[in-house]
Image 1 (tube, rainbow, N blue to C red):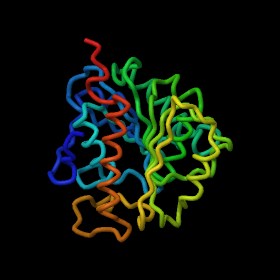
Image 2 (cartoon, rainbow, N blue to C red):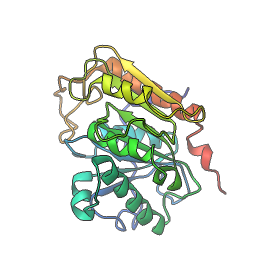
Image 3 (cartoon, rainbow, N blue to C red):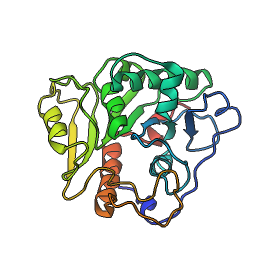
Image 4 (cartoon, rainbow, N blue to C red):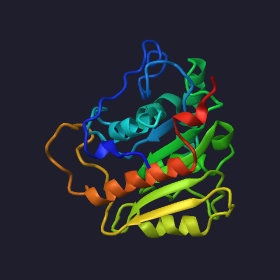
Length: 259
């Protein structure tokens, strides 16, 4: 397992190369692992209801993007409220976010990014978890290049039962979550259509609630104020679980050596 430097060192976010971010709508934020356009594995983030906030060190999405950048993974963070207004896709919360992802991929690929031959990861938090779970359970996910999904304390209200799993899933959930109770996620995992090729890894963190990974307000990431829901032990364990999951699934810079 590689060192988890996110836990102890300040990180700088990579800057999207000139032209790459300009080719995208303002609600799609590209955070590449490097400034070149070399094909790399990629991830799309769907935030929780509070939104993206300020993407700077200390912001939960910016920090996880930096963590994935260290593994050679490019990241796109979606401001899904703005993207929903722009695209107006039909369907459930998950279906709408899946449509945003597929539209974003078309735009990125037109700009020479997020190569279809490189594996993708859908990552969602709370409400945004609906989008990641939908991509993990519908043909549009694997057909678009997604190869795994990671969900933090996801809402699962819009997911079908039995759940038709089509990708490996890592779920990170606090046992004391009163917003997206663990029992709902456990029921989805228990009632899914099982396939040994697609594991569903459910990590439960005792005593952790909703937003356990939010160490700073998303709109004020440099603040010294720590939100009451933050659980340092659960946050650290979740990062370790992500690192292990990506290693086991061979999702990193070396998994897309096209040249």
